[in-house]
Image (cartoon, rainbow, N blue to C red; front, top):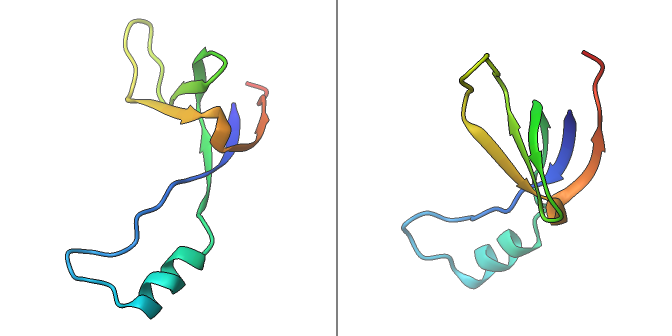
Length: 77
């Protein structure tokens, strides 16, 4: 499955932001991410995907909230 989604973002490190930096950071566009993987779980709020799927093991589970999803597409495999 292919999922295009908007990621949340935190801007700034351990230092303080002045008001101009704060406003510029707040106005910047959120990053659009692309994920491809095996859909192993779905409910009304989320997708759960893995990149590698074996007979009894998998890679890390990547969970994407549906409220952040822009588009999905099933891939032929």
